[in-house]
Length: 227
Image 1 (tube, rainbow, N blue to C red):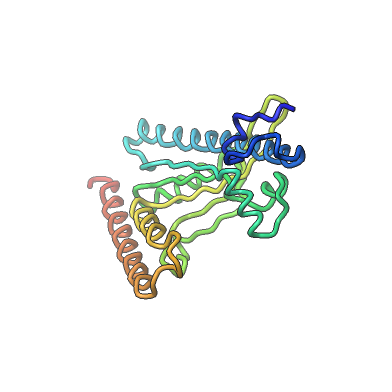
Image 2: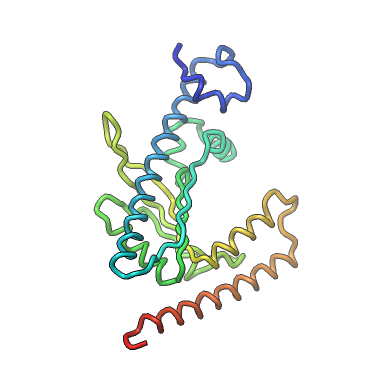
């Protein structure tokens, strides 16, 4: 049986292939194939973002995008999330229920750039916007700010075209700084972040937001004619 052993080995953690029931192995193979398709979707979106950034460099002598980060949930992570939600451990279930298998984080210099990049990307003919969550206009209780988009993009395969879903998070450098450290402080900490630290993090989020707004104001002044 051709089971793509070299590709599946990292999922089996030392278990030999002949110990795995054929049905289970087919499921694992399905998740491996799905991972490849989602990687293609991430490359497609990242290329679109890079092209927009390059155009701004040539046309307006600046880059609205500071950095682009991408990630794909591993098959282990996908199956673990499905199991925690008591959902079927199938590729179809993952594609239907998990919207963040493919993730792209876009880090911008200014608040205005977040909405500009969102508008330019989602106005492209082959990008379909599924959902927007604006945690900048309405921050999470923790103080977290970011613009979240769920979109689909076509992935052209040898025998078909599939529309693949991806989550895009767009935020400023300052927002990303706060979110990264907040995640690090709380990651796998028993009982979560202490209450006094939660309050301080929220206060720091407000300070960072004020800084973002002031930097945006300075940038707008620079862009005004005659400045």
